[in-house]
Length: 171
Image (cartoon, rainbow, N blue to C red; front, top):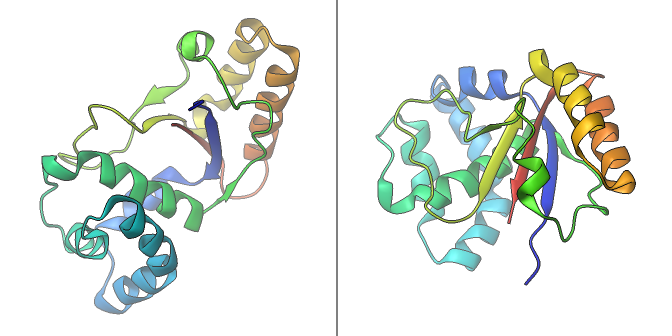
């Protein structure tokens, strides 16, 4: 199995502000919008994904047993509020250079007590206020020209519209 990067252009702050502050109607709409994606996760992992999302939206504490699953659910939420970007140059990939990009943070969601998985997925992000720093780092650190150019295209995409944050899933 080869591992690679799945980039998502999204709005992390909006998600952080909304996720635990939805009224009952908004929660139902959120679940409805995510339901097809949750079925995919349910089929892949065999865990009670819908119930986990409902508990999360209702402010119940995060359970360490589902640490990995929260981040797969958040991937679907990031996509609901944004879009995936072309990653043709990033499968497979090596994390050695990616780890040198200091503007990328790992598991950077400002939600209290969300557990981190002990395996996959790895989730990196760069918020809009650091995106130009990331551009400089990518230009200096990413040695493969095709990967560098594609990464810079992700940054360009984040500089337009309302979804100005970049999230990278590695699995």
